[in-house]
Amino acid sequence: MLHPAFSRRQYLQMISAAPAAAASLQKPLPGDADRERRMKWWHEAKFGMFIHWGLYSLLGRHEWVMENEAIPVAEYEQLAKQFKPKPNAAREWARLARRAGQKYMVMTTKHHEGFCLFDSKLTDYCATKQGPGRDLVAEYVEAARAEGLRVGFYYSLMDWHHPDGARCATDEAARKRFVEYIHGQIRELLTNYGKIDILWYDVAWPLTAEGWESVRMNEMVFKLQPDIIVNNRNLLPGDFSTPEQRIQAEKPGRAWEACMTMNDSWGYHAADDNWKSPKTCLRNLIQCARDGGNYLLNIGPRGDGSVPEESVRILSAIGRWMERNGHTIYGAERCRVTRSNYAGFTRKGNTLYMHVYFWPGETVTLAGLECKVLSAKLLATGKPVTFQQDEFRVRFTGLPKTPPDDPITTIAIECDREPVQNMDRVRRERPRRGV
Image 1 (cartoon, rainbow, N blue to C red):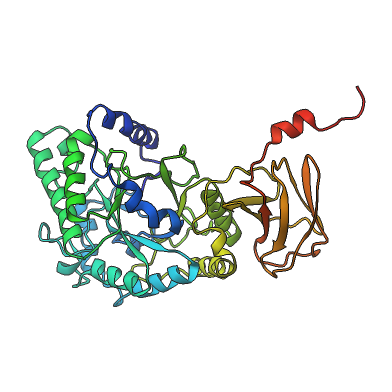
Image 2 (image 1 turned 90 degrees about the vertical axis):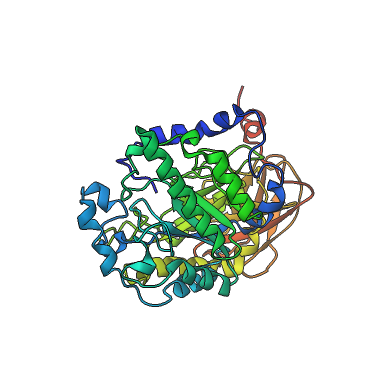
């Protein structure tokens, strides 16, 4: 993933330029024809687990430690011999993801450091030929499938270890070698592990889409895996956009997924204690679902594969809430109710779910709703909620003084048509005293 020290603005400009670059090709791109079919499950799923794991996990000082501390390649690669995770660590991750209500997983098969967690015939810098002595990607795939989760592969195009990883920008012979290496590893990943659901490219530095031969890359991907979905970080539009550490909805018709950490690091960082609360993570999930997107929430296992206790605590709390409220998230449609000082919203058909994260007490109010409310109930208890509706607001009354659910209480509101909120009308037309 990106780091603040990396030229984020330049990289995001490259990403935003991808649709224009693709348009200039004047022909359909790989995957365009059957995107709706391929992505149906993904739109339903809404919630996935990201896993950042590699040699950097041994050091525990952020996934960019090799770059940020200017560790020489010869020194850093010694970690490969020391990397000896416990057997089948991915089983713990997959069980945790399932209990948290996550429907798919995406793991780093190769991060920027260049070390491959899979069995590659193209390099000795891989798990089967170094400390682990086994294929860690194979273990991950088996674990995810055992828990009924969809399988995604993250793969970094940028490579700090490969000798052509930087000079490919200025040396054509190096570019050709490096591109064939990258294409070859993607081919290995999509050939050796059965059906793969997601390919999650990352940082395209230092080449353009043309330099990476990204059209040819994606043509190969879809030939090998006709049902796969791919993101936009090989500088083609792909199937979905990838706002990082922020929630930024795309226009209707364009899929997107916000990827975010639970603290400030993707890889394991022993000293990073800036943990988000379960409530914050759930609010992020609700906002993504409201605006038609997905939420990919990260864990950074230690070098031995164990998951930090705080990550387990957060995901376990999320899972308990999802057991009761998950049906308000999975398959949610874009929602045109957005404004409240203490609640978020999701929608399925004509049912509006008001997720109250700051419980105000016995009365909850929603303004600007341009439909008729037919009924309401508390999801936590199933009890009907009394309400009064006038032209400008709906007041839900007789509620418990303390929230009946933790950390967010949901009110299911049945409407006579798709719920839409118009706060401008409230501001303009609500009667005011005086002249």
